[in-house]
Image (cartoon, rainbow, N blue to C red):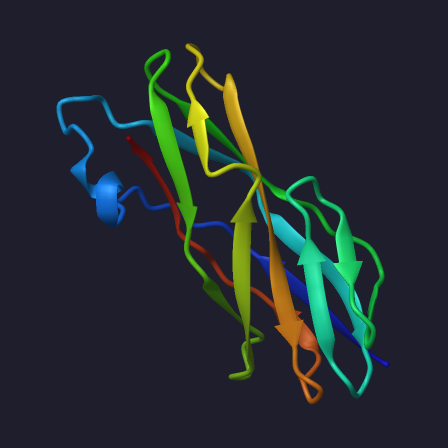
Length: 155
C-alpha cells in the first residue's frame, strides 16, 4: 500500500448564489464568515483498487475497501456573524486538490447544515465541513492540497 496525504486548505468567497439565494436583499449587512479550521482528510494508505474517503462534518473519516485511513483527519470549522433571527443558506463548491506534480483529486465538501437562523453576537453561529474524495486505482502518492469556495447568503 502507498500512503497519500490529502488535505484541503480553505479559501473564502462571499458571492451571490444561484436561484433564490441570488435575490438576497442587498440592503442587509452581509454575513461575516470566519474560517477557524482547515479540512484535513488525513493520511491514507491506498491499494491497487482505489476507493473513497468520507470525512463527516464532525471529523470522523471512513475509508472504503481498498483504502486505509491512518489518522490526522479533521473537519473544517466556520463561524458566521449577522443580525439576530436572519436565515442564511450555506453552499460549498467542489474543489480540485493537486499534489504539485500535475496529479489531482476531486473533493466534494459537505457542510453540517445547509441553512441556519443566526443568533446575535460574534462567533455564536458555527458550522463544520467534511467531504468526500475518491482515489483512483492508479492514484499517485503525495500530499494533495487545494481550496474550496464557501458561500453564505441571506434568504
